[in-house]
Amino acid sequence: MQSKLTPKCLKRMLKLIGGLSRTGMEAGNAGNFDKAFLNMEDALSYARELDKKCLEAKLLNNMGNLYTMSGQWDNALLSYEQSMAIVTAHYGCTNILYKTLQKNLGYLLKLDMAAA
Image 1 (cartoon, one colour):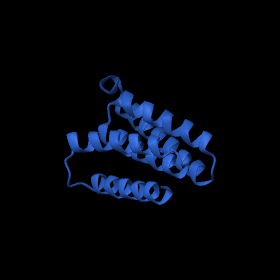
Image 2 (cartoon, helix red, strand yellow):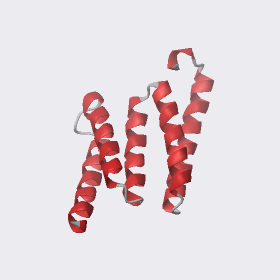
Image 3 (cartoon, helix red, strand yellow):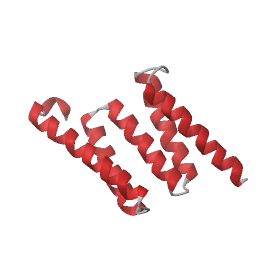
Image 4 (tube, one colour):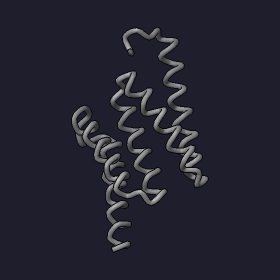
């Protein structure tokens, strides 16, 4: 889809994705997880249509954060792992998103161990 978009249309799509992501995270922070996941899933779908791997990885990380906040730790782990796979395959292990994912996975492990 990306090759068919004009630069102006691409810019609008990226702005839409950013807005959906922000709205999703704000809803999650307010405890409205239905709205949060709906917005984040829409943003993720658009990012995948555009084949923007870095954006997809960031959104999967955000999705993992939402799952963590809502207590859905298995889904959080899956989202973080999907994001990590994209990051390591396309950007390596020395970028900030990789380090953020390591931190998020560590936090998730602590939550899981505390609950055991």
